[in-house]
Length: 168
Image (cartoon, rainbow, N blue to C red; front, side):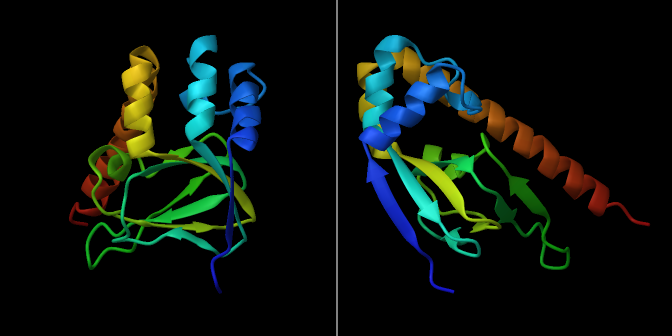
């Protein structure tokens, strides 16, 4: 199936960020952003629509964007070892993915596919870096949230790896 995506920036992003900041959305990464930083983050966020079955990105694809599920469900598959079945993680509203490639610019280590029609917000790393220079406190808050999310995912992966690797 061909992937389908449409992007709307700025005005749609502003509505989303405003909802997050007012506590009416469930996106934790934006819960700490203050009033003065609102317009800045809204100017760099993009709203993307994906149909069920569409790939958002594939393993080995270029990084540099942070992905945030606004609506829908995304399946993440990541091989641990060639002889071990690929574990699947499900991302729902409020969840982040693509954090490591966003931070380091490397290629994606896994594949992300929409299980349902989905609305995914993206932030480009280069745009974020410029904005973080203007609003350093906001940059630290968002990066801290990303690092917390990565830490949780790493702990899950370690648990899986060590429990699957144990001899029976």
